[in-house]
Image (cartoon, rainbow, N blue to C red; front, side, top):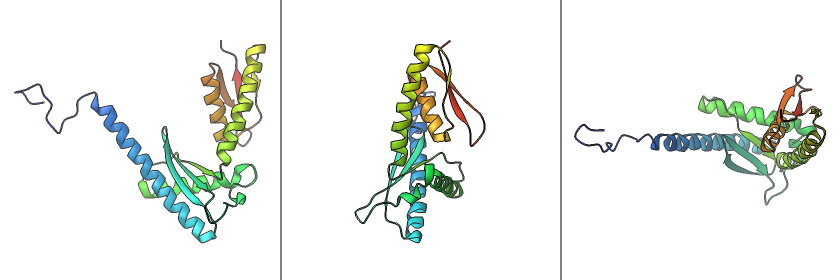
Length: 182
């Protein structure tokens, strides 16, 4: 601000504008992450001679990239692999490509042929069943081992329903325990 007036100079931001500017900058960074990931995955699909279109979005605090069926054909489900293991590996490779290009660690989420969306719905349904059991019994309940993605979905749903949860164990046998509210 200038001393002559209480009006901010054009190059100054008010306190209220700062979070909005940071949010806009963060969204732009996430969009760039998504674009870098999409370029990497397009090249990978071309090399493997695999059909698929790339969708890029931002969901909360992470870029979301999806390989979806194209007009030319379906995405081979082998890109998901048994229990999503190939999908997890492709996600890690894509995150590394983004980090190499941007210099920043990426938390992007990759989905292939709707696998994660289907898993999310199934895991939420399971979590809700167990949440109801925990509420009825007042006893903690452990779930089967899950991937980091699935555990995150459970923790989010448990929190949304007003209970507590924690992860226990070590990979690949890490699991969620749903706790009654104390």
